[in-house]
Length: 218
Image 1 (cartoon, helix red, strand yellow):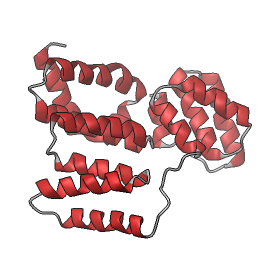
Image 2: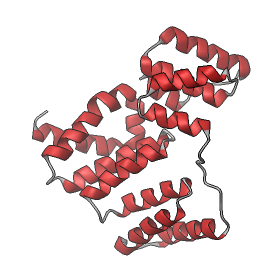
Image 3: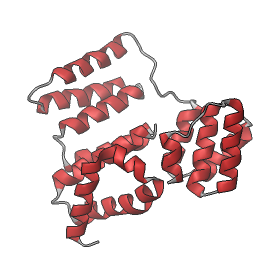
C-alpha cells in the first residue's frame, strides 16, 4: 500500500471499530491490519490523530479477546501518537483496573478528566477505582488464572503453546476447551478442532459457537 492507501485503510478500520474487526477474523487482523498499522506508524508519524485512534481500536479488540496485557501495549502506542486522548486514557484506566493496578488506573482516569470538557461518566469511573483501593477489591484478572493466560497466548498467536498446555491438563472445563478449539482454528487444524467441538458438546449439549471461536477460525 502507498501512503494514501494506508490512510484510507486505517480510516475504514476506525469507522468499522472493534466489533467489525472481530467479524473479519484473526487472519485479517494478523496478516492485513497489524502490518499496515505498524508500517503507517513508522512512515506516517504526521497522522497522529488517525494513528492514535487506530491503536486505540486495536486495543479494544484485544480487550474483547480477553487479553488485557495486549490491550495495554496498544493503548500505550495510541497515547504516543495522541497523548491527550480522553478515550484512550479512560480505556487504559479501565484495563488497569481489571488487572488490579489501581494506582495506574487512577493516574489515567485523572488524565482523562484533565482533558475532558464534561466528566460525569469519568467521575463515576474514578469513584469506582477509588473504592477498589479502599475495599482492597480482587482484580478481574489474577495471576494463575489459566483462562486468562491462554487468552493472552491466543491473542499473541501462540497457538502451539495453548494446544500443548490445555491437552496436558486433560480438562473438562468448557471455557478452556473453547480456548483449545480457538487454537486449532488459528492453526487451521480442522479435524482436531471438530473433535474438540464434539467434546464440548458432550459436556455442554447446548453450547454454541461464540464470537471468539469464529474470530480465530476466520
